[in-house]
Image (cartoon, rainbow, N blue to C red; front, side):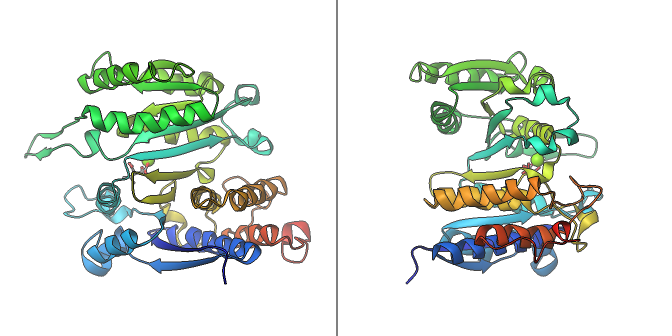
Length: 365
Ligand code: IPM
Ligand code: MG
């Protein structure tokens, strides 16, 4: 008998997706062994690989598998053969946008954390990185990403629209998170120019009355982009729309030295999907050099949502140990890089509580 059993839909996707997801699954298996759980995996195609196999970036079978699972684990999607062709009829990204919409994943959570031992890799001076600990709440199923699109010979348009309900439901989750954290929420918008942003501000102002213990601030997105570099420790919870959240989360991700470290969770009322913030890094495909940590930390977020808080903490501690022991991939370790699979193996050994020395060459050259 297992303590807990969970069904996980796995979408490995494109580029480095399969490699990083394989390591994340090894980590899940190490957790299962240590704690007496059982995870069942259902694999399905999405993105470029699904286009190649079926012509459709999100086949119905994939949707069915995701809807039947307790959680979805996604690697990454995207392939340059589509990016460089503006006339491509189907694109891998359509699969990702459609799964977010179909599963109703209106909130995307992206925590940003700095590892002290990696501070030297940050483009910022280390004094600016002290006390940086923020989480971005990005609206994920509305705004300019999903508005009506038109395309003429010499003109094109993308409509940005939001309604009150769409703003309220993600804002509520962000306010709740702020009450669990340092009680600060910053709404990032462009309310000096955009009607949608003025609606965001109005809704958030109204809601703030119900959260007197949360200190709410407002920043225009251009200023926020600057503040993230100038004084990143001022942020606790950032709440923002789909497009601004996309841009700011990439910006925030390099504070810690590599986008390869940042996990994310997306959810609505029913389904949950976990994926690294980074993309499919096609240049590294098949080379076993990609950083699996963002995906492994996404798995930690999944475990916590399964009610496995201790398991999640152990995975996060293993990641910290790997970083401290310098068992890391080349994006954060130029001198003595480990392979993606070696980092995965070291994480599993740490989780299983086994000795590192027998398996990890960095410690036993
Ligand atoms: C992200 C990605 C996606 C987005 C792309 C791949 C469509 O950049 O998850 O941040 O823009 O949402
Ligand atoms: Mg992005």
